[in-house]
Length: 443
Ligand SMILES: [Zn+2]
Image 1 (tube, rainbow, N blue to C red):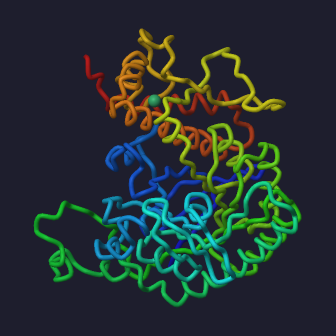
Image 2 (image 1 turned 45 degrees about the vertical axis):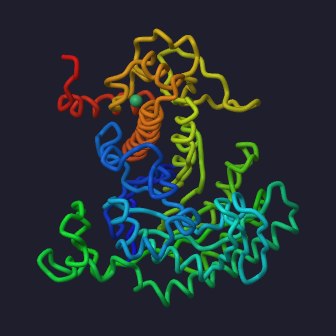
Image 3 (image 1 turned 180 degrees about the horizontal axis):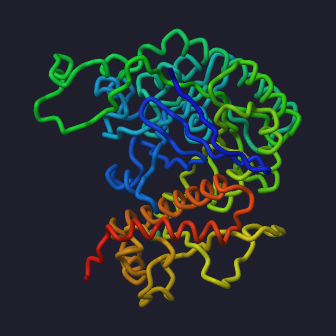
């Protein structure tokens, strides 16, 4: 079995509280998935990821990028190391993208034919070819719990005709991806390794000195799941058609791709809403590459179950931190013309005003950074270009994103009557139990 998806509660607005059961463990949804581009969530170690967030539950699923791992260190090397879970010592669920987005956005000289895409590596200019079959073979070797069909990402803006043609190619590639996956899914590196007992011979391939890694016990008979990707650019009719074609393929989950590429936010929202109308309610729905904290909250409340974005970690490495508003604090709209208030304040830690600020980044945040370090110290680390600053900033931003989703899940589970204030109170209460286990280091 690949996955099971258990919906516990649905709001009038369509938001769903559910549990996604994957070979490497359960994921509470709606979920935000930190991005581990090259088998690392930049600057944050796995141990820390496992304990992030208000309830200490940590990130339950992370992403890795097929394009990056294919180029370096190579998917065959990762297969020989037992798959990406074992390679990076991450025992929990993972998702790999298809490599399509990076081929179209990062690499040079890409030539697209019906067969696939020829491109040059952004690392050394070497020539490569990626097709639906090749992307599947690479993703099977990596062995993430969820893999994505290979799709073409149309440039933005694109005409309706160009978007329609690209969408047709994406559908043909989705069918080829699914056919290859069906024939080769047993080749995933952990499919056989799981059946062995600690004392059995299959552990002998690893050196006696190998660090400890504890995979789930019940991987026998489990396999990866392949998600489809709805394309269609910024055209509602094409989005609907794309969703209908993919639903006919009866895949275990569906993503909405090609959004948050520079279009206004009300267009993103509209494309998501029109697509959600078509996607089956009993399967997980994933919006790729979004967004700011208030966006992930909004889309989760509309019925999106999974989201990922480099923003919390990338912003952190540029000194941009997210925090919750203080009582009575006025928030400027995220975009001109936007009326909905934002749920997060953006702080530029470089600013001189923080040089002697003794407060934590976010007094309402319980992350290990906010419990221990001042804004003054974080500013000093950042302007001094100390690597620790990047790590601490990333940890806080990731905790902020995970806590946002914890709050949304609570609010969906408790029903439509819960106000944002009540949800915030619930978050504070659940933090109370956790805080007792953490001692102030200066006490
Ligand atoms: Zn924090």
